[in-house]
Image (cartoon, rainbow, N blue to C red; front, side, top):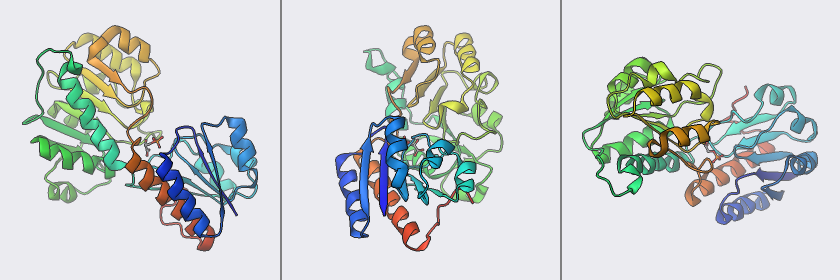
Length: 305
Ligand code: 3PG
């Protein structure tokens, strides 16, 4: 059976090697297509039974082109790039690899925050994180890693997540809050870890951001779709003290950069999970999950049930 790895953003070479080892050891064959076009994808999936992707868009047309495809594993957390309804219609199991790249994303949150608080290292005096408050929006695997690291900085922590019991947060030394308004009002820093869903799309905009205390910094390592960009731009225009950092370039990146210069920062590509370790962990987990599904239907992390 053929397992295809198709990634616009390549995995680190050691991760590709490890994926190959897992697939070969199971007696299956691996094809790796990196930085390929959509045409390359449509051609390569033709005879694939397993598919491993990252943020690559997998829609019904890709599935139509892949009559043998049984399982797609998104090597990572967010699976908004995969059409789940179409996958179910095509009888394809879709899984993610929860937790495998979450430390990498959490570390980048602090990389970007410290850089912003030190004025992008422009030689001017900055501010510290110690004693400041951080609001974590969604207390999943990334949110929990953010909390762990924030404690090392001596920050006060709050989190909002309607799917997580207060007791779990309290057990981690994090104060639960129960509305986005509370989270934004109470915290100097707000770090977004919500998935892109119909409910969350465009949900972070003017009203919420305007509630942040003086000097507030909004951090987005989740998805660009959760931001109402026009609303955020308006808030940044009215509040010169606010700042925005993200590892996802907004659609209006040029406007943000032109209007707000050093008050905003965006990585050139989505970089949160782009470390050797995260690539290795997520890649190997994806390969193991594909093989386990093809072998005996193992589907612990199925997301299109
Ligand atoms: C995720 O959802 O796991 C992260 O956003 C990482 O995405 P990437 O694999 O495209 O870097």
